[in-house]
Image 1 (cartoon, rainbow, N blue to C red):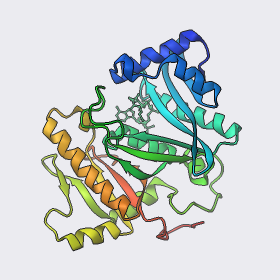
Image 2 (tube, protein in one colour; image 1 turned 45 degrees about the vertical axis):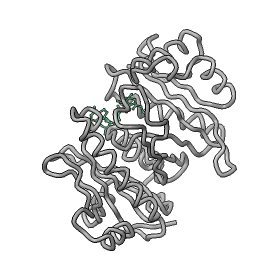
Image 3 (cartoon, rainbow, N blue to C red; image 1 turned 180 degrees about the horizontal axis):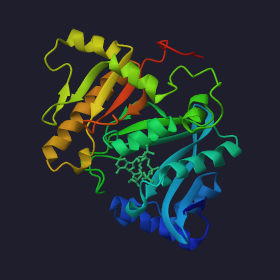
Image 4 (tube, rainbow, N blue to C red; image 1 turned 90 degrees about the horizontal axis):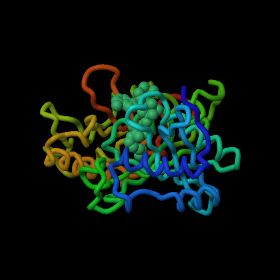
Length: 300
Ligand SMILES: CC(C)(COP(=O)(O)OP(=O)(O)OC[C@H]1O[C@@H](n2cnc3c(N)ncnc32)[C@H](O)[C@@H]1OP(=O)(O)O)[C@@H](O)C(=O)NCCC(=O)NCCS
């Protein structure tokens, strides 16, 4: 049984450095060192660890931020040691960060992740209830040396509204009677799945595993009307990072860059990620236009 607690001692801070090297295969110059962790923590950051006994097996690190004039927390790192994954530690670490921030009256956390990483997409959207309205090309440049960035460093910028009723419901808090949803969020994965059935798909996984853009054989007018549809889905395969073919990895990067770029520019917001229970191991991102009323349920 693991315990989630604040990381305080020098020994545990050194373990955070070591875990970064292990999880990201990063050079020393690419890890966040002890001094920075301590300074950020003392200035209002959140640094929590998952421990098996005395051994650190995961951690989450965020530093204070100011966005649109309000204090927030930017969670820069989340990692769980490979041997300790799929035990909900990633989820528990995010919830521990959230609890600490809410106790200080901070209601927004941001972070970034690579949308080709479907495990993270599932954790972020389906389990935690984040939304994303920004896609950033090569956020950390195009020469990353880590083992997890094998096709540039494109990222989705996600926002977690810590006290949002939708988020509370995703986390299993509160009661089902909580009525009003925010305009951008959707309340259950089932709703999203139902919507996705009638949504415009701008990118899908072809039979051969290649990206298939909906616009490929269509006029640009049809493409731009797709981008304006109320619900849009973008399908991605699992584990692009592990694909052997470098060319295929890059084709997926290029295709998703274009799909997210055009739909976000048209005003959509990414609000869910759905993995089918069976069948093809792909997942779909669900994007909505915020001003679009939902087919069912209440809107704020
Ligand atoms: C992302 C990461 C922190 C998740 O850690 P974790 O402790 O395994 O996460 P959880 O157990 O809370 O898993 C979250 C969900 O993803 C699923 N999941 C995790 N690993 C999976 C895998 N290999 N295949 C399929 N699903 C997986 C879990 O089953 C769980 O979903 P479920 O509850 O619906 O079953 C971990 O994979 C990691 O350290 N990755 C490398 C670093 C990284 O990507 N950091 C985040 C950068 S933003």
